[in-house]
Each structure stands twice: as structure tokens, then as C-alpha cells.
Length: 121
Image (cartoon, rainbow, N blue to C red; front, side, top):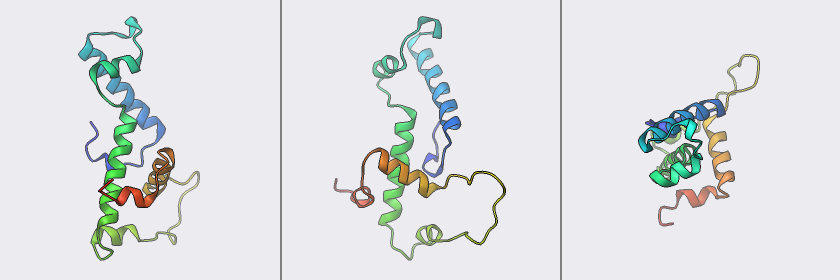
């Protein structure tokens, strides 16, 4: 369900839709329906599954740590340093970038950028 999710700068509406689909599957696994009015936290605890957003955040930060451990000469790191400032964007709010998503994940978990790259922790 979250294959290749480390590259998604997911919007709130996308994560909500996936979260709804996931909870529908978990309820089906447990034999509950929405009419049973069981809390999502109870169902997650019973099945032993973390929330979709937590798994998505974990996946992104794992990939971020992997990228930062690569040498600067690696093609992946060169692409990260590319700048597209000269490209003119359309009207409206700018799209959320992957770097902004990582920054928000780090601040949400109150982590430092250097801590994520350290595998010993």
C-alpha cells in the first residue's frame, strides 16, 4: 500500500484517503463494521499496526538518512542539490517539496538532521 512512499510529498487529503482505506481493511480483518462504532485506536492496538502517517514518516526519514550517508559525488546527492529557481511556476500555492516534507517530519518528531543520518542510534 505504501510502496515507494519515501519519495511522496503527500498532501493531507491523500493521506486521509489512504488512512480511510487502511482502516476499512483493518475493520474487515477484525470482523467489525462502522456500525459497531469501534475506535480506530482500539482496532490498531488489537491488530498491532502503526498508523499510516507514522509508517510514511518513518519511511521518508529512513530514505533521508540513507541519502545523507551517501558521498556528495553520488548521483542521488547531485540531484538533491539541483536548483529549479529559474523555472516559472503557475498560479496558486507552490507545491510542497520533498525537502519541506522532511523538515516538517523532523520538527514533528523533534529530531535533528544529524541524528537521522547516524545509524548507531
